[in-house]
Image (cartoon, rainbow, N blue to C red):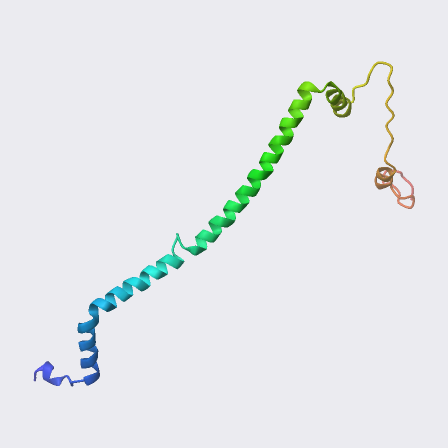
Length: 131
């Protein structure tokens, strides 16, 4: 018995086969178009990455502006240090604690700091020795 005679003729498969033979080029081009669209939207150079790059660009611009402002402040500070002797004197007095001859500096303790560091009266130190 021949196997080709065993197969039954299916009209649905015949129509599908005829359709594929006529439209194979359109199907291949359609498949390529779908793959291209998927790679465009989900690929490494898609809109998702574009949005990420835009956010990163904004963050870098903000950081740049901050650095430019800091640079301008430092430039002003350097200019004052080189040209303004009163500013230099105030800075030396404040940062290094220098005084002029026969000058007294009064330093006042912060009352809030003293309260934070002191122990309450009802607590006893373990080294105090009382039972």
